[in-house]
Length: 68
Ligand SMILES: [Zn+2]
Ligand SMILES: [Zn+2]
Image: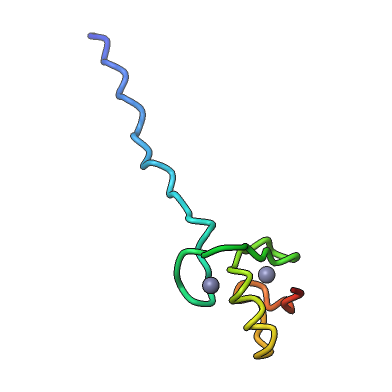
């Protein structure tokens, strides 16, 4: 019986880098000041959040009211 080499551990893919500074309202990088949803901590541009509030829109992720 010959000793078998231990197979190398499976190579895990590199952790997916989530851009947390991605505004889901205008679908792009957050510009200027940031608004953070108090419920789910999703970040938006402050300007988009203000606009969303005026338009009666909710947090894209958790449907929390925008509290600017
Ligand atoms: Zn939210
Ligand atoms: Zn935005």
